[in-house]
Length: 233
Image 1 (cartoon, one colour):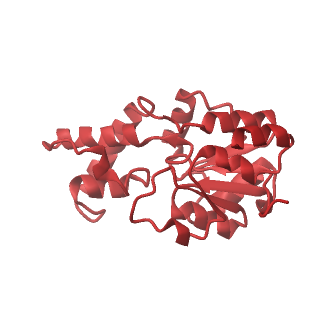
Image 2: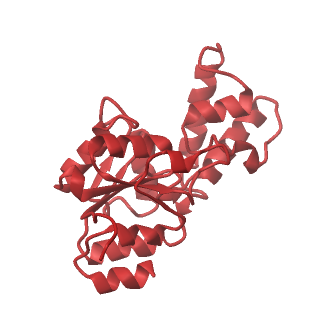
């Protein structure tokens, strides 16, 4: 007997959940630092900021806030540099491709719900060969209010053709869990993603914590239980 409810569709955050985008984000920030006459920072210097938008990365890289006069110019240039190298080193997390193929074989719909703007999201998923695969893609500029507000998640459920109670959202940030809980979906915190030592993941209120993408399958009501079990382990 299953000790938790099961979902019939999956919504995935992008950065830190579906794809490991950190290498290209960090390379772009370091290129910007070099342009500004600074040295590169080691990847571990960005723990807690990478994957959470341009503001924390710029704060870490330049010790500035959005009120500083340089901020907007640096942010614009950072996004330009990132757009130029979107998919150079970005790749799906280990095990994610097997999960997606299993969902597709079992006809379980899946989609992407991300705060990343569409002009970065869509070229990225296209470059990695994913543009025709998700049943929906909801980006940061598709809906007026982004995660942690529930609107994007609700729109993702609508596009999958499922009620929120039948959907599962997976994310590596508290805002993903907050959005899912408010929308009425099941929620999984992806601790394999960009979770830092300062995060208190157990306090986010997620329905479950997963250390590998394959664990997603244990939370689904499948069309083929045998196949899902074989991947989930």
